[in-house]
Length: 107
Image (cartoon, rainbow, N blue to C red; front, side, top):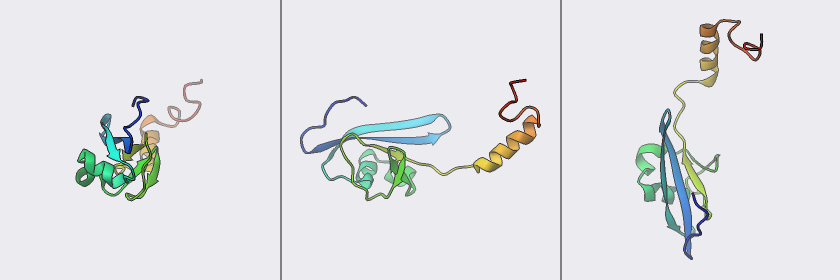
């Protein structure tokens, strides 16, 4: 988002959502001063479909009633489809002992 300031009494907000692997949607707009995260989700039309109750501002999970400031980036988080620990174990089994790990390519 550019460094442009929002008009007086407005907040310039951007909303980002990862809809799938490698797919990102962005919305940018102005909201009235005192707006909350849920207001940003309603303004872009993503509140019902994609939020699922989990959103954040600049990488930190916040409640939907969290107040916004000018220039905030609201992020919609989707649920993990695979547990990261399980995925790592499966990669290790597929690659074998010598092909995985910190020094796999160093030798």
